[in-house]
Length: 499
Image 1 (spheres, helix red, strand yellow):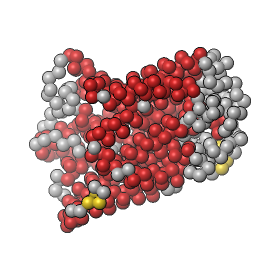
Image 2 (cartoon, rainbow, N blue to C red; image 1 turned 180 degrees about the vertical axis):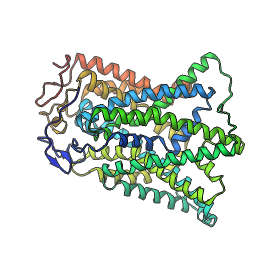
Image 3 (spheres, rainbow, N blue to C red; image 1 turned 90 degrees about the horizontal axis):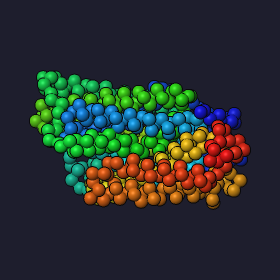
Image 4 (tube, helix red, strand yellow; image 1 turned 135 degrees about the vertical axis):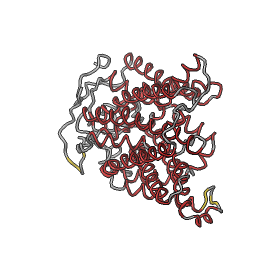
């Protein structure tokens, strides 16, 4: 069911809601009227998200869990089809309302309570933004040292755990990314339109080189660990669940991008091409290159940077440095920059816009010293793993609220109204139903993700948390509606529970 947004009153390309409060509104958080993201732009966005060093190593690692290559391939496709279906839920809501993630969260959590999911998502984005930038800077160091070995003198002393050369590369990439983002989402679209295909060309060339060097004699079975029937089922399900978990952050904020699409058909086509189709092709290239590295170098190399570094060609190293930089900027913009920029703007819209939110993200990504987080298994597991485990409950509450409880009935203007007169004020700006659903679900999903004795279930923490939160929210919202969908200006059909 389409949501009909009121006729736009323009302000720099956005719709100005009637009665909008400065504490909830700025031009970047407003419903957009600029629908410039076509099928190709969404497809290219997903290419940038998938085509990264992290995406490569993630996909390659799944082929070492003990399953045959074809079994891993099927499990990955099951996982990515689940992601596709779930992503369409967020994408459709964003396209219908035209609002970014933190504003969409106001529907279910309240105009003030939306800061809870927004800040959780922002923390994850900032941490991974720094980590991805750091990993790219390491790749850049390796490749540049291969060209100019004399630079090794800059790697001898360290400041806060990072060498001088490491700081130079890290800060350089941080500045490059900030420059790309300085003009907002339209600049992101234009960058993504080129970034994803550039990485694809490089991956195809690398795969071709591997095939030639291996004389086309490659075994795709990277793991020969014998498995019992029970272990086979567990590993198959684990692969599928890990694929969903890999995309869990963007499941929350895909609406940040889909809201710029002109129609639902565009969202469906762009997402289909970018996820199931693109992910399958990229995964095949990844396993082909990884398996081929065994024949060429004698061992399986899961890091494309290491493969490129072993090719003794200055031209290849230079191209590799450019491609890996583009790949990192691409995924960082999509997965780790856009959402925190919006999320931080949502905290104080009258003081922080998208550009300032992005600047804060860039600065905090340096302040957290991401190399220290990445080098500590405890930090990655307990901080990022714990935060990641609550993404499922947040997603479930938002989607159950939008599709099951409201059935698409949204008063877009009221998303920006502060005080008891607003439809989404609930109780002091918080929806008690969302909080009561989130807390018990998180209390279960976080231990599942972190407790070592529950290791085999850790990959399923997203589903466990989402299932619990979604069920609780559906039940208590039906019994004790926290709002009235009959609010003035609401569009769509009111739910029986709220009527």
